[in-house]
Image 1 (cartoon, rainbow, N blue to C red):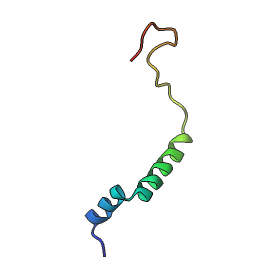
Image 2: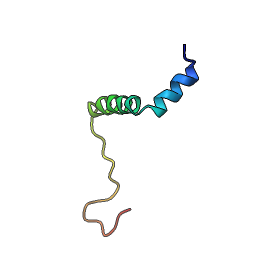
Image 3: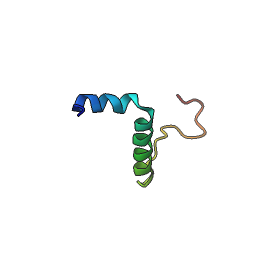
Length: 48
């Protein structure tokens, strides 16, 4: 049986686990209301 540390390490090292985690998080977040992240107007002379 794997220890908790071994399971956590495997999650980080196994690309399938990382992809599943990413897809799950993306799906959960995509259902939430959009928030405005832009701090500059589109016609500003410069932005970061």
